[in-house]
Image (cartoon, rainbow, N blue to C red):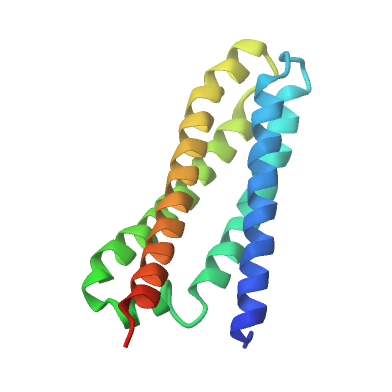
Length: 147
């Protein structure tokens, strides 16, 4: 089992890799569509699909947002909502991956896949922001609580 420091470092590294992949996906979608665009998008989505379970597992080591729930047990509902959203994000990415695999390389099919991918990216970024906000709020309340 990872120590807290190793887990935090690992989570930070995994978060960085996910952010880089999402940025790469944005770049591919913004580039002019070619016969290779779908394959480039699929390659990035496959990497994200492989990374997300590792990232989520690292975050759930010793329970998801455990330190937040310990300090603020009444926040369990918010933590559970974030955990459920993780599962939906992963399954929705699976659907995107399947659609990319089944599509042909025509620019029309590739263009049709961009809106759901952008929506997924927005949801993923919102999820990450909400997770960070909850952690930060808990830290600020804990530090600000005093003796």
